[in-house]
Amino acid sequence: MRVGSSSLKIASRPSPGSSSPERVSDKAYPDSLNAEQFVTRLDANAGRVLTDAEMAQLEALFGGPNASSADAVKRAQVVRSLAENQNLQQREFNRAFVLTQYFGYLRRNPDDGPDTDYTGYDFWLTKLDQFGGNYINAEMVKAFIYLNRIPATVCAVKDKS
Image (cartoon, rainbow, N blue to C red):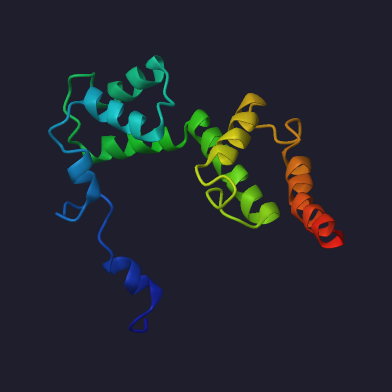
């Protein structure tokens, strides 16, 4: 095996569950939290996507709402369950979809002019959410193509006058 090979690099990385003072999760989610507090904070950070039943199920992984949340393996199971939550995945997909429409069709950031306060982004995200994430029925792409043509039309009219 050569020195510097990828297997050596992987072996030298700290394991995800290793305890080190640099871990951000130690500050935001200290081991002193009980299961209910830990799950509630994770859910709040994810945008409150869990139902009461799902929260109870995740708390049960620790042994109940008042059980300690210090077990790193159980914490990882809870985080993975939250990450695989269908509501979270759909919400994140919708956000990313609208953002890519801004980048791809309008060729700008959502907070660039004319709406520097994200009102346009929020409008399109709300529209997509109203259609359950179905961008075809929401006619999102068609609308962004149309919006992309407006500035060229306006510029052409200004040049003629």
